[in-house]
Image 1 (cartoon, helix red, strand yellow):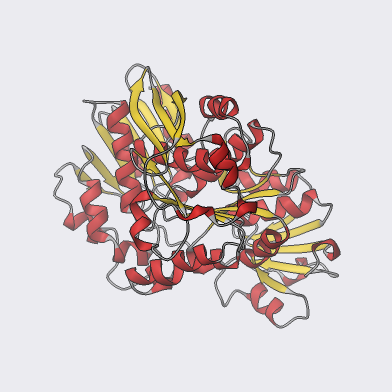
Image 2 (cartoon, rainbow, N blue to C red; image 1 turned 90 degrees about the vertical axis):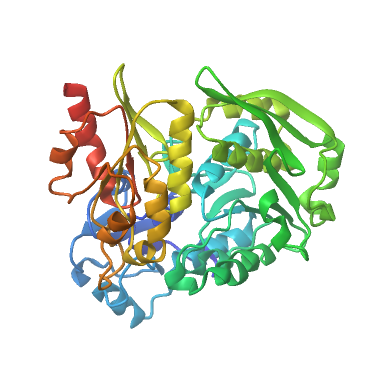
Length: 474
């Protein structure tokens, strides 16, 4: 497919964070953009203001324009949805979002960031590092960057930063010049089947998609799984590129960073081969001291180590890296501070996997030691609730108080016997309550709140504004 031949596109599920970024990319190229989504959101309203035409609700074949050059769809759309069926029986080229992103990645120098957790923060931080360092990259992000105020930014260089999504094996369409692997915990077992397949037929295959002259960066803790692959490692206190001496000072995470000496980094540039084959070992003679980073949690310091490693190899200076870390504002719904006064702190977080909940809770504990943490959690997907019910119960038990909501189904139909109660019944923390969306706010208002967190990837974000208004008005 020649991207220059595409003038008129229809996006089926345009309101998704990945779909909307792709729509913005084609809109920036002067294409006429049409689309459908189930409901109107803040994001789709912005897309309309940017010149796109969108309709909502039920399928409406009458609102599909003629003369389309391409239809892009997301697996989040049900397979029996009438508009999808219509396009499957038409002569218009129909491609998944991941396929189109793959076409873009093959035509440019792509940095693809993969992992069960941390992708959005790392891609957004890496984009900020590159652009602060005068590498005018294009970026497709899995969240709304607070610095960019968007999930997409167009650039004039040949570098593209993209989040590599493991769902539906989407990232296997990418052909990165630089590949980054942050984490490899089991998820999406409805797609992969067994936990071992997530690594074997997912992340390992993604790493193999790196271009022959490319470069790979892998979390040091995962190095043992990639004995036959040439790569560099990153981490906290470990890895070729390592953050160390991590501490909290006046509300900032502060750390030092060690890496190969600059001339060795240049020798390991992607154009010179696949990384030099180091899987661990001591950094060699290059250090940055007292780097300030506003994102909370040691897991985010690890994400920062990955982003710094790539930025150094693309040619960003230490001075630009220091400035970018200090000015990075984070991602909407990634440990986002919504409200804060002398009595109460309100944080909103996208965590929807047990490991992510653990990281968010640990970050809250580090920032607010000794304070009571109340979590409002909405499970995301019936299949994920079924597969990780023990992990959810274990991590939620570590909060001081938990308000557990109904499951948000997203693309899935109900699974018999799978409700939020299977998590609730496994929890040992006595300070727990099971609620519905209808009564959640009323229950919350009966609580003595100190640090409160809304947690989940569904529509729990629609409660953020009402909770904030109530807290401000108390």
